[in-house]
Length: 426
Image (tube, rainbow, N blue to C red):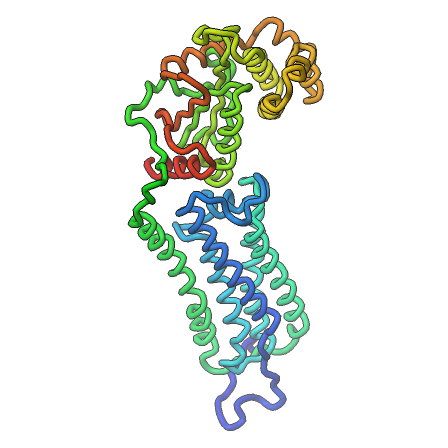
């Protein structure tokens, strides 16, 4: 029986007669270099997402969003950013590609080991792509590029292996040791860098004093009673369900008391949405609560104020009672009314206009109309109003983070910093 791997005898001939040596794998070497660079960029993005409030360059929208992927809970493993693992992997790919320059081996011996490395990389990429697309619900352009490179490398390596698989596997003395040494030499340093760089950057960031002119996000020292900031997760609890976005188990809970005819509420809602994307919606729970600035439903307001605010608040919750996604769709439409003329508002926000919008959202219009007519959602709205009053609300929006009034900068950057500070405090 002939063994699968035959050691070459070292001597003047160096190998058996007619033996062919493996050559440098140029395609894999090129892919390794590109992949290493892209993974390094992913590592930089990860560090930036943790140390800066600014949006990343590859944040296009809520779906194509690098911050949610590289900056979220799945962006690292054992506290090491995934970008460092990518650098390590492509370092090993390069090591395997240039290995023939350092040892005498048959093409089949090298190709088989290159295929093992390529297969592992492609399988890991498929798992990460699944997590990104189906668990996080976002796509990172940089990460997807890395995934694509590993898949391309797998097929290139597979084709190369199929061409030489029939050649006997032959390797010179010390082949396995050289293989291991090359992999460690190019694979371990990136992991060490990935483990140390975030710590170094975080230390540097913490040691740098904030500019005097910058307003630091703050929250009042005294938290509100826990019952004021409890989240009703069902219509069978309290006065009704609190509509919310994010993870119910998140460490950071943000309540926003809002009026749908309040321009500042519209801007703050958009800024909070951008901050949620930057931090990761799986790490923060956003709860929307109504505080209409009109004495039609709010006894704390001395005038009619925003004439349609109470009707919009009830219509908003009536929409959500049929389909939770419709709550947020209706909210966006209601906020768009801020740009309408008074006559257009009167038309769009009449009962007929509200029912017409419900039909556009494919809701049961009869059920929606009955909900409005019977003021089914009014008790919950008045409960929100009462809690807002207890919190000392004097104008909308009132934003509460983990039970404390937020009094910092109201901008995507300000909310992002506040959310991250709250996460670090937990």
